[in-house]
Amino acid sequence: MGKSVSKVREAKLELYRKQGKIHARAVAGRFNTLRWAIVWLTQIVFYGGGWLTWESNGFARQAVLFDIVHEKLYLFGLVLWPQDALLLALALILAATALFLVTALAGRLFCGFACPQTVYTTIFAWVEAKVEGDHLERLKLDQSPMSARKLTLKGVKHGLWLLIAAWTAITFVGYFTPIRELLPALAVGGTGPWESFWLIFYGLFAYVQAGFAREAVCQHMCPYSRFQGVMFDRNTATVSYDLRRGEPRQARGQAGRSGGDCIDCGICVEVCPTGVDIREGLQLGCINCGLCIDACDTVMTRVGTPTGLIRFASERELAAQVPPAPAGRPRLAVYGGLLLAVVALGVWSLGHRALLQVDVLRDRGALLRETPAGRIENAYTLKLKNLDDAPREFVVEVSGVPGIEVVGERVFAVAAGSVRPVSLTLSAPGGTALSGVRPITFRIAATHDATRKVLEPSRFILP
Ligand code: SF4
Ligand code: SF4
View 1 (cartoon, helix red, strand yellow):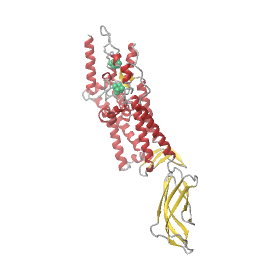
View 2 (cartoon, rainbow, N blue to C red; view 1 turned 60 degrees about the horizontal axis):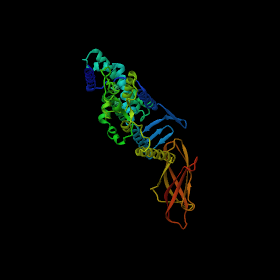
View 3 (cartoon, protein in one colour; view 1 turned 180 degrees about the vertical axis):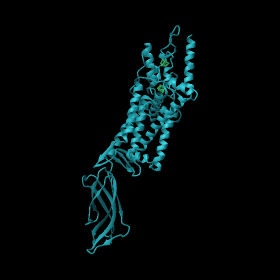
View 4 (cartoon, rainbow, N blue to C red; view 1 turned 90 degrees about the vertical axis):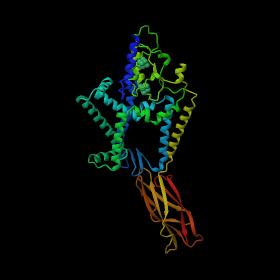
């Protein structure tokens, strides 16, 4: 009798796992709650971020905008230019190092909770469950022949998926073209070729990845899942089945039950979004989402056995039954140290980034000009680049030749985040002992802050 119950369960599991599509059973618990909290948080930030405005000097603009046409990245009060690429590189290194650190500590935590693939699959699967019912109803529907009901349910589900995918694409493109301009343009079919391309591409991408590909992305397409194993050590805590405690697994009600704590109910497999049986050990398909922990904890509570048969545990802890060692993990020290170094470098670079850049070009038309008063004049074009998010005034001074001075206007206003070319004439006394090409230095400083200055070398030509 016991054997036949077990066989039925095995057959049920095999049936479940051999379906082309995984219909995961819904589960409640702390990891599911955490998962949804992160889904909400990331989606509020993503869908809402594009609608935030930032006011600067009486001018309101989108707070977060990648303005590719004008080569600027707006991040609230910060405006980054191509010359700030180092900061962007540091941000990427920071994100990668943080990911390595988290992986070394707790395995694929990012995959299970914060990866966009997981987040959108969770949202799409939720829509699917709302429309088609629980996992068994969905399985039944998939296996049933086509009918008006099936067609309606599938149509509604795909319609909702397409709506979410479309809005996701609009939001994404809205970070590159101001979303308040994009929507009216979209309404009248007036989007540009690149905007149209990315709207269609990203919309279809979201629809296919979250609606159809799902766990296949984690198992077969994601490069990170392939190499993250190198960040693991014996102290990395991952979702694990406590073999010592669980085995030999034995169904409840089986005569003469004397086995481990696992009652072989199979629910941990049924809730798994990637179809993994965690009892078979650490697998490539496991994204560390913790849903099997929720499932097993519920089962353990129901049967009156301590929870934690499946839990976050390290290889060391499972083997020796001791708590993980917090110290003596060189890779944590390396990742942590790298993280701190990148943060420090980023903060320093941000504090020392130049908000004024100047290019000095000598006038190619004439080498020099002599005035009736006997002074020698050279002409220049200065390109004043104000990288600040506010309009600024800059004063130009020059040195290097005795008596050299700027002729006429010396103070120039430059609008926020723009480049102003100005024509400038320098004058020096003629008839002195000096002659030929003389090195000079332009000093351009902000009027509101003399420390914001640029020294640019150039040449002054005397007869
Ligand atoms: S949920 Fe727990 S008791 Fe049930 S099969 Fe999985 S490990 Fe065993
Ligand atoms: S085995 Fe558990 S932790 Fe791993 S993906 Fe499946 S449900 Fe998530």
